[in-house]
Amino acid sequence: MRQYYWLSRDLSEALPAQPSGSGSYGSFDSTLISVSTLRSALVLENGTLPQHSTYQDLANFFHAHPNATGVLVIFADPSLAAQPIGVISRHRFLTWQLQQQRWLEALSSPLETIPLWWQETQSYLLIDPQMPLQDVISLILERNPSSLHEPLVLREPEGASIVDTSRLFAAYTRLARSEQATLTDPDVENLRRQHQLILNAIGEGVYGVDLQGLATFVNPAATQMIGWEAAELIGQSMHKVLHHSHPDRSPYPREQCPIYAAFQDGIIHRVSEEVFWRKDGTSFPVEYLSTPMRDEQGNLIGAVVTFRDITQRKWAEAVLQRTNEELEQRVRDRTVELRQANEQLKELSELRSRVVSMVCHEFRNPLNNILLSVSSMGRYSDQLTPDQKEKYLLGITDNVERMTQMIDAILLIGKVETKGIEVRPSSFDLVAFCRDLAAELEPEPEHRRIQFACRSKQLPVTLDKQMLRSILTNILSNSIRYSPAHSPIQFRISKRNQHATFQIKDQGIGIPPEDLPYLFEPFHRGRNVSNIAGTGLGLNIVKRFLDLQHGTVKVDSQVGSGTTFTITLPIHQGVAR
Picture 1: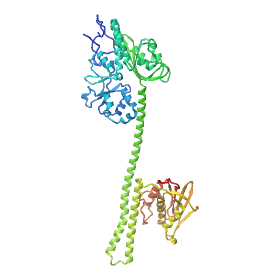
Picture 2: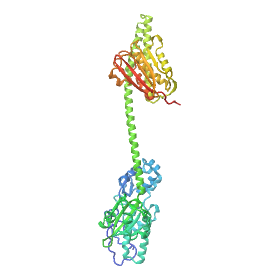
Picture 3: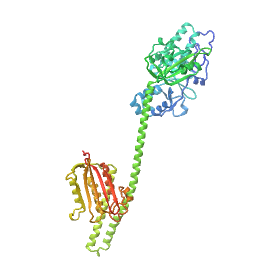
Picture 4: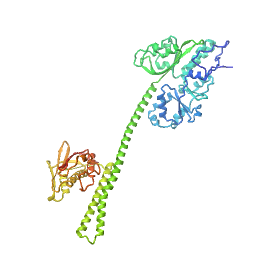
């Protein structure tokens, strides 16, 4: 009956002595070693992701575990962990990342949402701890050549684990070589042929060295990666050939090399942040595993080195890092935008509350006046003279007009807040426009107080006429309202450096210093206005319209002496289409 080495053997320990008379191929001892020893020998990996994880979770896993061969995808129910849904190798993960656009679109999606990738995840080789090693090797070689670098999944009662295929091949190769001494010539030839087939099939580079660090065998994948022929390497110092320098080209002393340490301390060494050098003098980043070899008596006789080119992985990690940084920056930018929007919403909410409160207050007075007038006219209608009735009616009209102006102003402010109003420039003569506006505000020539002046006879501009009319009307009306009946109001315009300057100076009651910081706030009125009518919205509209046109306003005032407003506007706004 044929006997085999079982997968559960510790492949890094010395081989047991052969029974006398053994001679047929495969007549290995079948002694079983514990699973705990197996874990030590094959460096089993137990990284897992729940079934509904996203591709971002997958990227985070490999970023957090740079040496991981792969990760198991398991059911959400822990009791089902012994039979994983699938396995995703690092190689497969990096291949997916190379499809950059698709990868970025998939980041936030669960693993199951991309059918092709999910199908690849579910295609894996599951092995049992008691399965003969020879059968495992045969199953691996029967797979698609592109799948040879995919890890195996070892099923155990306490849960599944990942086994690196290259590691398994290297261990099998060491066993095969150590048995050659006890086999007959035909058996040796058969074993050597199978050994060579395995080495040729492995996608990772594999080579062996003796105690002097001289190459004893090199597989085709290794020669292809470093640019040497196998015949050129046998008997050569592999450290001098491919591991002589650090990435910065500084010398790498042999005594510091983890590869040589393996056959000095008898410990497996795994490294993922070094480079190997090609024959043409270029280097490439590698991940390698140096496993000590022992003879039948347990003596160290060399090491088997398995390595892979991780250039693509490094590139993908850099892309992932850059993508993560870009995403983090977008999140930071979006957070700032949301914070600013939140602050604006808070300000808008506070403004609404103030507006509602102030509107209620401002409307109460004219409504009370209207109610009083209507009540007086109704109660004393027979006793009132026609002049008295007319006076009451004029009062009602004035109060209605005041409320109408207030409603119009509030609606206008609302339009500006919601960007429902746009600057619509047109070309016109500013001198004629301002002269006509002053005349409109004081239609009776004998009572005119506005003294208009400009050194230019004409001043062509391209501005929003309606906004400019509102700005100047508000300020001139305030000067008229808050100044003595016959005091003059100076209204001057000038041009300088493609900007028009408007100066409106009165001799009115002035603005208290403590009111100046709040002058352009809605519904704010100076504390010295007494019973002078006003809504407290005009200057707020002035400021908003100036901001829309990139203008500025400056206020100089002294209580009891008057106020000067200086407005500056670019004279040529972009013409609306």
